[in-house]
Length: 111
Image (tube, rainbow, N blue to C red; front, side):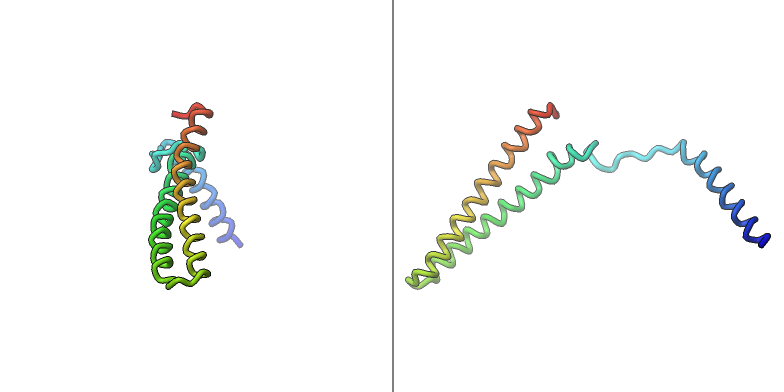
């Protein structure tokens, strides 16, 4: 029982001294963003837009291959046309994402 009390007081004493010492330490920000809004507007959204753009370009290539290998089958040609339309829509959304982010930053007054 006495050992438990001594250990408890030792831990409390070490923690109280550690809090005094750690108050003097400053940790630099490893990110270049200062808040979550800045991280979202300048980091995450452009990264996702770039990924969607790259996938859209790949899907245009896949749609072309589907169209070439359809061998005149109307259902396969229709599938290739839908894939092409969705890929073009993805590229349009990607291009609009940059404008949307710039508009939101302007509206919020962000640098």
